[in-house]
Image (cartoon, rainbow, N blue to C red; front, side):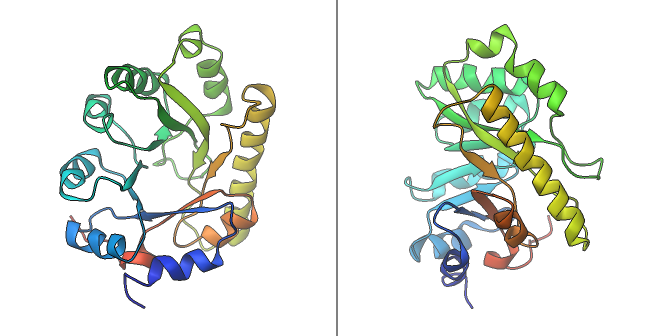
Length: 222
């Protein structure tokens, strides 16, 4: 299979409710263009500077998703064009996204990122921190961000039952937040599942999968 064919091959497996993000981190513009020319237009990056550098060199109708840990000082560069930020993991970053979205006369779709893995290196909110954020007076005033759902990363392990438990946990968080705070049509995205575990994620309710190596091959070391 080639980069041109890989996204379509994966999409054939996906239920209609599931969106495929081709994760293009470390890949050159030429490689992304190859997938784009074959018809795929949704891409994800996890380093802000890399996305900032690539975006002007690629077609304007690409739907860019930012999926990595985001530093506050980089938000202003993403705000003019990013379609969705998956990694809202603290109050400060949401405040900054709202501020920069307002400057650009945009409403930016965001996901709340939760820490569901056993690995300490993963970022993400706890349920307690999420409640504190959502119930804050500042949150109620954010008119330039739209919370569309939640995101999480499972532990990197061959224990598929552990991965499944973690995805179930994230789905439970999603359902709880929807019931208690976001009883509307906007709150519908459950972003979980990558190249190694996206099939399990889909079985556990994922609506967005973030696939890199199965589309582009192993990541380039930087």
